[in-house]
Length: 213
Image 1 (cartoon, rainbow, N blue to C red):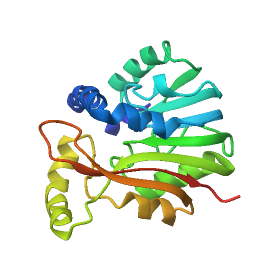
Image 2: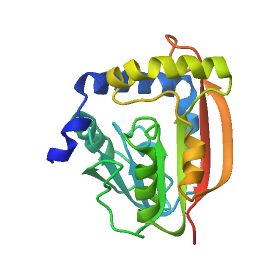
Image 3: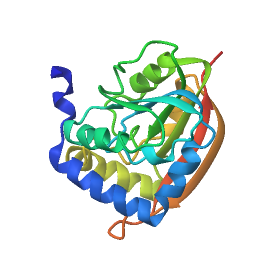
Image 4: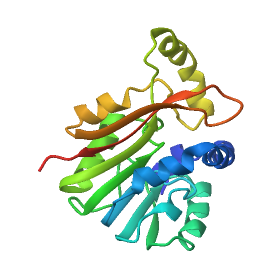
């Protein structure tokens, strides 16, 4: 798909795998389990990466449509899907044009992806589009620091890091964007998490939000 060319970051894909494995060993596996607990029906996972969430979907989930734009990560996700405890279909696509019918999903999962989408408002509008009325958005993201000085540092490094890090923006106010998109946040946990021994702890959020009925 020609419109996926801008989402190909082969060097970052390798780094993503390394960081994901280390983060899981440091506690992110527990975050993933909390993120997915209690899901059922049809789920759309946006930016599935290499499939680190796949082992943790509960058996009540009938189908996961896992959307991933990066070709290298999508290939790894496809292999991970074959070992998953639930049925997972991996599809090429991106957050701003989800290859999913409107109003078809019981839940959407956004896991460490809203930092890197080109347009958060557009991506969240797409997530809302594919959800059934009253459907649930599950999100697990790193976000802008609350301290003004840390936020200023994040603003300073974002232009360079977004080019090196597959579009990642460490300074995004993601919970504000979720609310602005029309979702009602029903559960929110905010905590620092050190994803790697090479970086300081960064603020993360893990929560649930409802689409309008």
